[in-house]
Amino acid sequence: MNSKIESNFLSVGKVANTHGIRGELKIFPYTDFPEMRFAAGKELLLIEPEGGSPLKVKVIAAREQKNVYIVKLDGYDNINQVEKYKGWDVKVPKKEAVEAEENAYYFHEIIGCAVLDEHGQELGIVKDILTPGANDVWVVKGKGGKELLIPFIEDIVKDVDVQKKVVRIEVMEGLLD
Image 1 (spheres, helix red, strand yellow):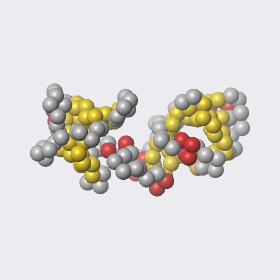
Image 2 (cartoon, rainbow, N blue to C red):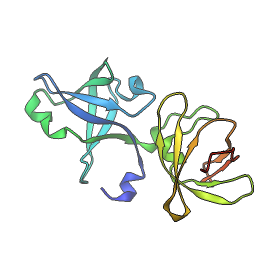
Image 3 (cartoon, rainbow, N blue to C red):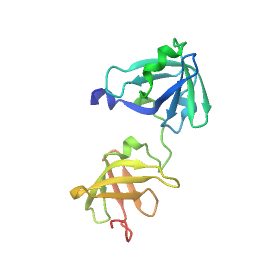
């Protein structure tokens, strides 16, 4: 998939597997709003990991089961029709993004941001976000390839400007070691 198409969509999940023989898919959600994303009547795009044209599908039913959603798509009534979608990405148009709460950000807004210390020195660029538990940890690729792990907590992250793609942090003792 070309980057122009890619930049217009948000990932909301990945097809983990099929479910049963009636054409249902198990989708692992990447969203804080799975009940909204996989609601009956919602349109989704299935996108092959190696690229290719997005396939527009419509949800007719969905239910949560453990850590996945079992989703039934309109027009798909048996396992043979959906087997090929295992591993495909599930996306929605970026215009359907749910407004983030204050001091909450979407991963796509943070990844690519420059990280500056309290003196304005650039420490690197956010390349990934880990979600180990209590708070997210931003993986910053520093100069010379060194990786920094920045916990997303008030004491460290002082300002986030997603428009300018800049994050300002206060460097606490041991943070850059």
